[in-house]
Image 1 (cartoon, rainbow, N blue to C red):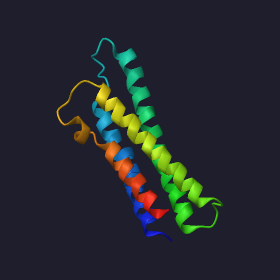
Image 2: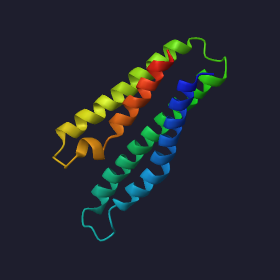
Image 3: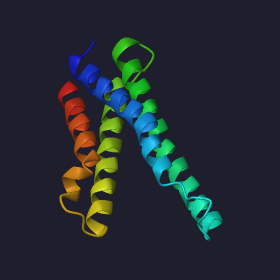
Length: 131
């Protein structure tokens, strides 16, 4: 067992729980009301956003399961490669998030208020320490 992989695993699993439960609560606040004249089109966009949101939730769960398997079983034949692949995936997530923030309209302190990119890069760095 690797403590660094365990720490990364716990962080990813907590992110999965937060993303799935509290994130969906936040998304429900944005659901179009019945009074809106463009409700059908807005409902479609809202549902796409919600589905995409939970796609990320599934990604977080899948990464958590993969880290658990690496850390607690012998089922993964090339553990170092899988850890490196997860690190690359997390770096890509963070980069895509950061680019989207930079390209979006200005929001004060947006890089830190919406700092999920920081979390995934920290987890990736923790995984780097495990190699």
